[in-house]
Length: 303
Length: 226
Image (cartoon, rainbow over all chains, first blue to last red; front, side, top):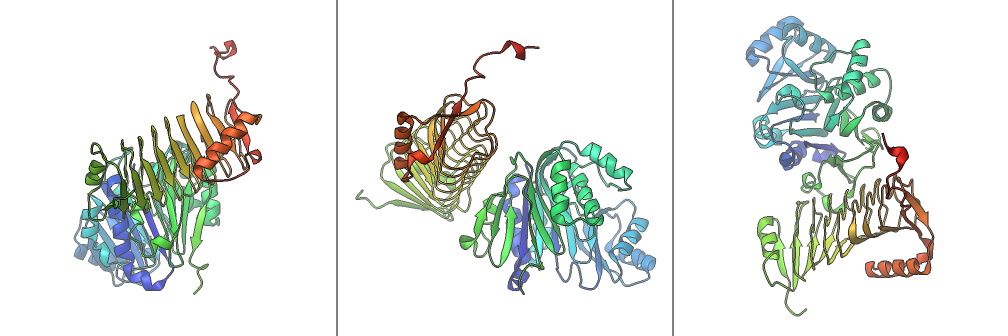
């Protein structure tokens, strides 16, 4: 089954409430998936400090102090580590690529949950309610957040099987459904030099989108190409620092609801997850059409 | 109705208690449900001639299996709206998600907004009137009953349809296997006028087209054997 949620805030007055609103959305989708969950928060000043790069490391196997010391020595700079449940949010005044390379060199066995300059990705095993508590999500702020509640069907219940899949800088993908032809696409991407962390079908979708974006496509084009390349059932929510997009497969059996007001755009598997959002009674609410890419960007929002 | 309606606030009363009260023997009168907040299974399995008004959006299977009751949802409905309803009236003022009226046996389902994919799938006698458009695969394998679509229909309308009758005012993106356009005779204009009137619309029936089964799939064809 699985549940997905996303909130793209337009009104900066709501930024301090991002974590609280996202927590309500995620826990409302617990009935769709209660074995594991994950979130991506864009713009929290503690979790992804401005002017620095942040990487999410999961199951590192060392204490935060050891990570601070080891990565600090490797990069020769000041490192901060925030530990939340099994996720370490590691920030440093360097590029995302340099931080990623250092983390992979020092901790080759740790899972990289996500990386970039704006995003903090947290994943874990357990109910969404307990994870929201362990993460301290209610206290988080920012301009955008996405989340996923998982009911595992095709790979193990582990943090690496939990969504979001955040495989490009500040990019994130959450998925409700399953891809049928991911093995062949993974093979093609590997042949093109793309590396994979898992055998999970959703990771293939995330790597495909990241590969297209790196080659110069915009989000709409990348998702349109995804609909013609992938076979299977999916509702996808794809985000990066400045965009938020939704697409469903042609069969459209996986649910999705979009709501939009002047203050925010929100998407969820079910309306239940949107019912608590401020101004929902006056929102425009609709079900996205199959194979239509819906995308919003921060630039398009009037100041 | 002289008695004041019984009101249930779903933010304070459990859905199980509300549905339990609606299943009690011998009830009549009017019931109002507030703050559904997208809950699933609101007012399912009612089997009494009551009037139920829901203020707000509901989740999956709202008014499912309804018998005798007249249920109005002032809002949107999730998937499986009025699934397998037997009789009575279900009216949604907003949109409905996929599989609205699936397998419905009887009564009238009115959706003022749009219905998503698979509206009226495997219909078995229910009448459905949709104020807006319907999504793909609507009326798939529909056996009996009527579907009126005031807007457009998505891909594969009426695929593998049996004897249900489809009336569409707008565009049909494509017809499914064995579904064809059929002539509008006086009998059909009269039938459609009655359905529109029952749903509260006054469109000219002559602006609609009728679709139904070509009946080519009813019999085994030797060239389909292996």
